[in-house]
Image (cartoon, rainbow, N blue to C red; front, side, top):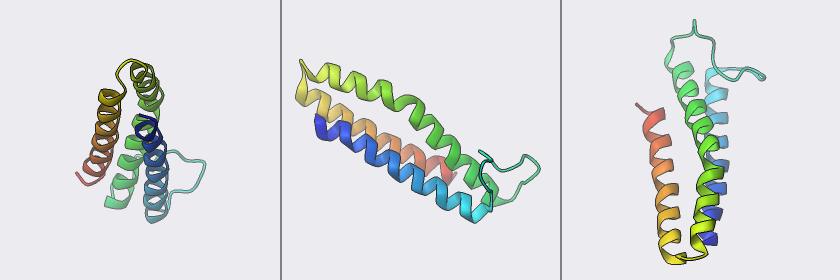
Length: 100
């Protein structure tokens, strides 16, 4: 169960690196959160998608980890499996959303 919860933090790191790589390719400087709306090129679109996927992940991670740990007090194995499933599904969401 603890490993399942920890995996979400590694996925967050991967999201950050992924978004940073797309930021660099799109040449979007900090502090801009997204590429300007007048940019319609593929690099800008992929960066915006990576940024949105990362933001969506960070909005949902605290409640998912909290629920995982709380449920794990009574159902540790089921919680661990569900937690790992959540992490894998969030990874697939990120890959699919950026490459759509």
